[in-house]
Image: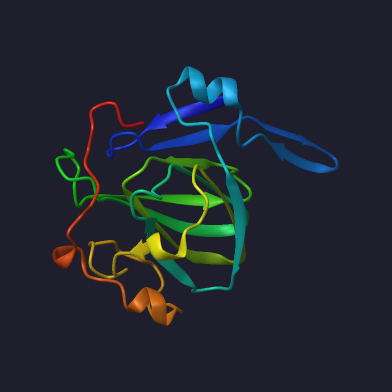
Length: 186
């Protein structure tokens, strides 16, 4: 069903689904509760949403603060993005480190992002449509982020299009994380 690829960040997985193709196009399953349960991944998704972004748009690095923090599934449905995930969990062996991925509608790969990690992406081939599923509903007062240029991510866009909100997030070195790493994070 999925090839599960471990990453350098505990609990963060790249899921590579089996792609079904024929003369009509392509089908990819992005979620299967039994498979997720068998791998210890959260399955109680309560909200799904999408974003549409033009070339050179950079969104991130976003997260929801406790008690509204969530696990998240992220998939690029169309176009391609350079995706980055940053570990914000105190006591994590990977605290402050990030990993990057190439997500695309063509590949259909999915990220499972556990609680306590920040997520962002830069559009490489747009427009790009991203879909997210989260285990908590969006809470505006818990909506937060880290400055996109403070975590050492080598973003590909030389002059990215960034929202004022994203430009105003605190730098990683000034961030007092509310997240705590637990060995059973997944």
